[in-house]
Length: 68
Image (cartoon, rainbow, N blue to C red; front, side, top):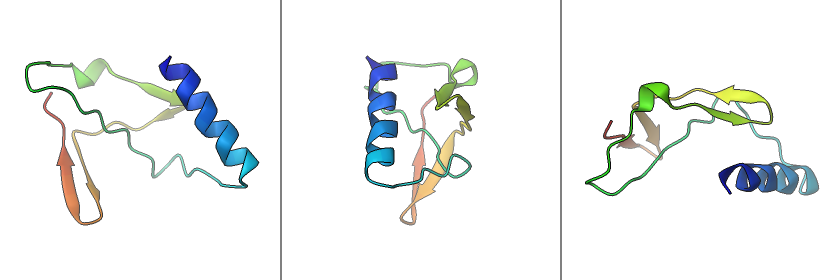
């Protein structure tokens, strides 16, 4: 299901003449407090390009942090 969603985003971008900057795209994963994920083993490929993963990122002057 997740791979299908990423494909839909790519199709939407092409249809609407939008370009996704893969160098500035950082995946953010939200989970329930009792679920722990190992983000070191996590990778996300979008259009055959591996997206950079980080433990935190800044979005609209708000720092988002993962609980890994």
